[in-house]
Amino acid sequence: MADRRLQVFHTVARLLSFTKAAETLHMTQPAVTFQVRQLEEYFNTRLFDRTHNRISLTEAGETVYQFADKIFELYSEMENAVREMTGEISGSLTIGASTTIAEYMLPALLGDFRAQYPDVTIHLKVSNTDGIVSMVENNTIDLGVVEAPVSNKNLVVDKCRDDRLVAIVPPKHELATRASVHMRELLKYPFICREEGSGTREVIQSYICDTEECKQGMNVAMELGSPEAVKGAVEAGMGISVVSNATIQKELRLGTLVALQIEPPLERPFSFVHQKQKFRVRVMQELLEFARAYCHEHQVDER
Image (cartoon, rainbow, N blue to C red; front, side):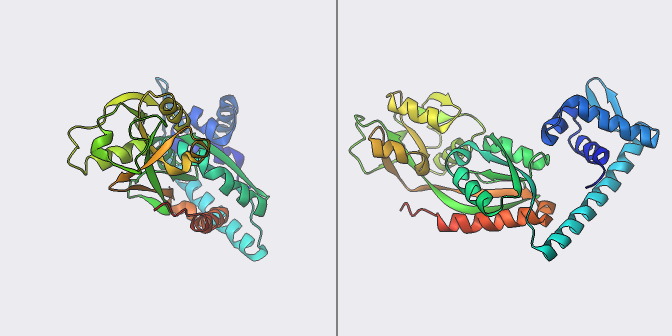
């Protein structure tokens, strides 16, 4: 409803990038540039300084940006107030999720949410945990769902559920007949792990450093970028790994992998993370409340 030129300018100013703004707004970069130039012509002044492929706000640009913040906050309050009266839930949200969550948890959750609220449009971006937290910090997504603790105290972190991690080995591995295994034993074998920045890898490394084996560390044989790739490497006998129990249900049924409980148990939270002001948007409130109820209902007792 707000002036489109102002919306585009506000996004570019927040991200200090025409390219990132175009991606966030689902526009082409020339279209973003055109909207900003239209606003500069309206005010008859430059709003950005452009030097050496970098941009910064001019003094006039800073003023417009500050007022735009207030304008969009008022628009949001107005829309929420009217929709509260009418009971309408609609709008658009951009959600970011780390790989494990995007592949194994979100499809069912978002499918159920869309069935209940068909007028809500949801865009999904997938990255590792570090990437998702960065997107939330830069306001390029409305809501992140991550699989590791978040250190930024300026963000709101809302725990969804606990996730149990287990060791996985191929059926003919010498540990395959065991029900559980201590981490010190796992460290003796070639380890297939996720890439740096992955929430799963961060949790495992933190867990190891809480034990006596911290200095020994993992014998990393291979780094891979997705749970599916990790499982495939273990199935092929290239090493062992530690993954979310939620990601291996198909392989356990087919008998292509064996899961071992880790001693002491290893768990991590699945959490929603967002900017504080984002919660004021009615559709965001509705999604978070729906997700909390969904996570509670589908919490799997893996103990």
